[in-house]
Length: 288
Image 1 (cartoon, helix red, strand yellow):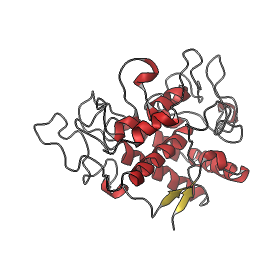
Image 2: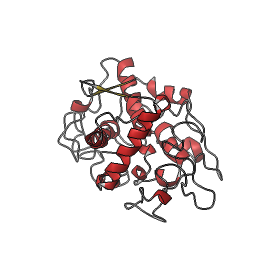
Image 3: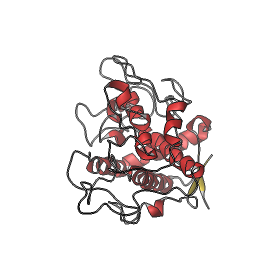
Image 4: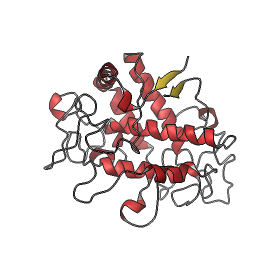
């Protein structure tokens, strides 16, 4: 029977407690840091050689859908009532709204070093020490809204610009494409400042701190953000009935993208699953 992922702003106090407790237990068991390592390993740009699966490629959405499922399964092994909530950043847009509350993810980092000092994921609790992809310190950092160089969260109209595109993705299937739902949602733009990051990418920049770069999984908000990105894909699929993941076939040997992107029926590393198999997950979960 399919379970339900809820808007984080609608969670009851009990649901918040159970989600946090399960996250901390997955971390305590050492499983959480495996997720961080996996994301770092597959965080490849289209300026590098080889296959891209997690970012700057059509498989951005199915890759993170499966990644979310793996985390969710780990949480549900701890507590079968827990699911990953989603953060609708087009509606909850301040540094004090959900999910930035003391009983959930905690708040912004302090001014001096961006260390998160409130909530269950604060370093001082002893339960959330960063161990993978650490650059400066082992504590969680955030810079919500980027005080020194302010940036705004994407708006509903900006998200609508992605949802309205009826084509999933287009050649050359990378960060340079200006049409297609996938990159409009993933958010690789041109220029400097906030215009260079749209939708998904701009949210990572808005949170700042640990959420910038391949080790962004170190901040639990990563999962709430990507649950909403997954919901956006679900909404796009419903709006554009019959629209499919592209490319349907792998680029040929004459293409610069040969063996660099995953086609619909090809395996999606590191799993034994294809994007096609991840297009319909209605038998696993639904969104409230």
